[in-house]
Length: 412
Image (tube, rainbow, N blue to C red):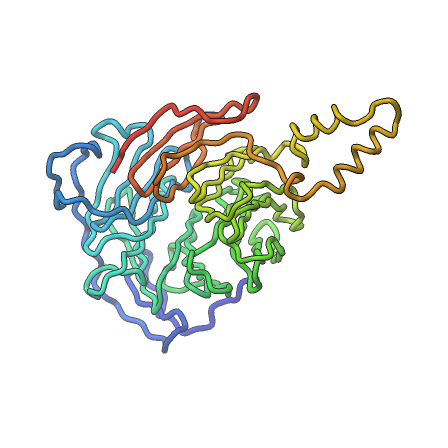
């Protein structure tokens, strides 16, 4: 189970929490009360392709981070050298396509939970300590359009995860859990192996509360059940380091990928049993994102190879086309045919016994890292890249193969 924090922390503040500096254990504990961050400038609603000068400098600012809303589909956020933007996927071509906020020093990480009007931000790498940097977490109230608190650490914040009234801050070797109404004091902490990618996911469903992160051994996944039952499950998922994790909406399944990037595995979070093994390809790749469909029927996988794969979680364990070919070529004269087919399946190399993707979408050559998420429509996928590209595509489960691109925007 997560360990309660025993370090010294400032006393709890009134209802609307105030900024604080919290030591993460790398140095002596201390606290202070800096000034509340200034409300950033909001740019007018303009289409991303508008060449008119905005309230921020007209020179292009680099995209640092992209992420989809962790609740209702249809929104994504970006962190830039100058601040952050919130996009509506349905209005990317209109003047209401996004809202932009200027933050001195820029934003390097954005985690969004618009259902609860909460956005968590981490500053970009910045040598000027007067500006936000990558050791500081800032909370944005999207209903009031202003910052409502911040917390600083002694080391880099690698990732953030939001769940209703909770926030998880991922550092190099620890994950801290906070309640948003008591942001000054972490309630739990989890130790991990070095985690420079900030690998972590937390369930968003109301019925169960589950967190997944790397364990303290290579290739190990830690599954932390908070409710309805409290327990910790450790899964030996891969031989090499964990590179990516994702939970299904109902938190029943966790998808994992290793640093090799050839196999993606899906485990039952309750018992830790392997339920699916998918093969992305034969060569090594960096898995950039994993995403379950809302019904957990499909899993989307993006990598640095420029292809987004969609796998079916309801197919059999043997590639259907290969199985059909085997059945057509084996003798049918007696029951020995069935026995022979079973024998061949049992000795097939693992390469063939892993399931292959049902649908694929190929990005243009030279595309930058992307994240994928399922859309509001059935069999719809949205893809956002750090090169400012947005794709909406669809796949046909009955046909499979290449997806159909139905929309494209250069949003940045």
